[in-house]
Length: 295
Image (cartoon, rainbow, N blue to C red; front, side, top):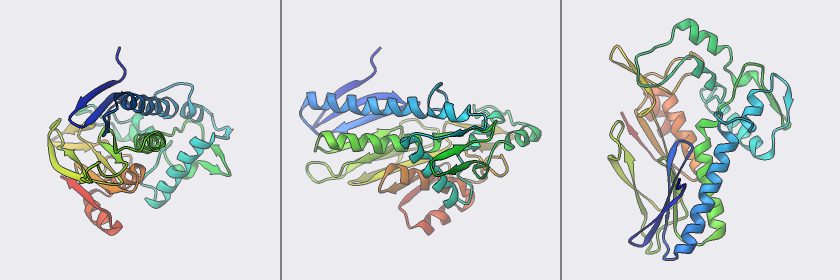
């Protein structure tokens, strides 16, 4: 089975692989095929490492150890602590709307495109295991109450983009674009000084773009519900859940794309925007960021 694929197109080498349930792409402006292959392997190896370490669907990794700690005190490694600190910052900045323990609501909700809305009693039961404020995280030590779980899914892919770009910059001084499932970052402009051109996918229409954007520095991240939702009584229920009520956020945009200095920063703001529902645009305007909303 081929794990990575390297193609040559015009002045670019294009590397492709799959990680974190997403198509991953690396655009490299170089004529050196050997260098391009090396960079592709570096990016893929790092993405797979992060997936293995932080996916809640893997066993015997950092997240598994935390979620199965049964209330015992743990001392996470430095990289896990970095993500926990960022998650804590997101929780504080969002007034509790961004909560990495809200993955426990997955016990109630299955966003498979069906019309299966869970009973309120099922949601209430799951809500007992939600709340970052119930977690003790201080001085590098973590205590997660028994039955609760954490999920880095809201920041993991964006973190992987930033990590891969950092590693690639250390190995080559060429124009690069790292794109993991629509979350992307660039090293800078292309060799001729022009920006990279990327598209924002239209919800429910694979490979069709509503916007073509130009990016010469920084990152773009998109959050939305195009693939994970329920449809019942002509109401679309997004997978973006309110950790206080246990129900999907109401009247949120179908997708939000935000430009930022890093992919993890842009992803945080895009998700924050969705969590503000009908007030998403107002929130993003207040942050002074460049964004695109599709409703």
